[in-house]
Length: 520
Image (cartoon, rainbow, N blue to C red; front, side, top):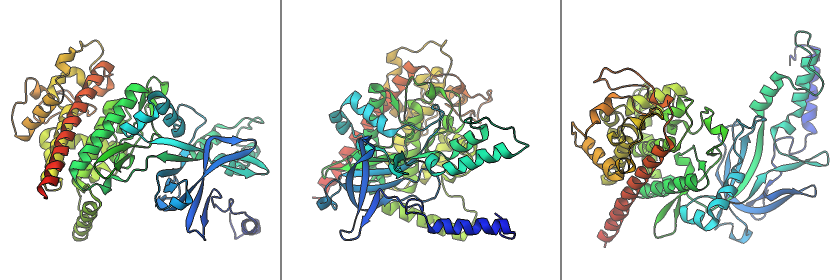
């Protein structure tokens, strides 16, 4: 629009006049979330399970005092969250989390996001409501696609309906431009499809229970260990029972439930979950939260994602919180330390900055360097953990996870992704479990030069997904994750890691009990 000529000025005036005649929805207001000025709370209309019936959106009203968090940017998923109640008289005692999100959608089913409501309902059907509550898995009590009225008809609240005039103008312009081949009526151009796929997002709202609290509400790393152990039990049970792989283990997707006696973990956000056996699982997709994505995920490896990628993400969660602090106060203090250091030296590189800055490949290389061997892991990560006995326990767990995922000699070369022609070690060999992992990790901690037969070889061979090798050896640079890891071996590794987390959880519970009794 060029307002220096008459055509541009006319278009500009037309735009301003059109704004004056827009209704609230056209101006960007959400008519399904309304502030009650008299009662001082939000009324949130959440679609019920059937969403639409007889031309009307069936909704359930929830009441909330304020958002728990709001979207920080204009574009993207624009997620908002409310702690809400079905009873307006209990608005100050919420028991439900309202998740409001604009999910990415695509006409290509292989690339569209998952419908979290359908996934949660499927999981509940497979394992049962009581089991979900016991495990600590979020449940959907209501939800669906938000709808609104347009020209007397009820339509989905998505960008295709909002921006249809733009798409129409785009097609008209293509048809009238001589340099562009004329497209037949009713047939969208490749360019239009590209724009639709980039812009198409669907407004969904879910009512979820139980209502958890963020990880930063924890008081110590001991509680964090308990929560993480609970979450990975839930993760593995869901994978085994209903076949869903979560694919986005991160601090924001792990919540805390505190019943007054003890804390437990709650696994949430199944937007990226995919069912094993789906063709989509074999498609290379970079999904997740950048600092916590596995190396293979960051590299966009063609080898399908597995539970080991989620376990690797858990390792990064442990390291991240070990450095930044577990509690809110510790995280604030750490940020103040970083701000102060940056004022002194504007080029100051704070710990783990490379995990959240740069391209996917940059982050992958940074993680490769930090996890290449125990010396690098200690020097680049563990030495920056917060001080205290509880953080020392968190360090031990991080060492054990890294050892199990990247340098476990008990698993031999098969673990590093050799072809299916390799003979899988028998179950007793693989299932030495957490004891072997902990033993190896303690050997690393004490600086032992030998951690069992094959340990040196494990340093020489490129670790899972890394594509690098130890500087102490002259070996061919390989990326072993270009070959498929046997599902049977993955199961044994997963079981070993669960046993490890169970040991860590028991130790954490014992430490908390000792601390509580010593106070009296």
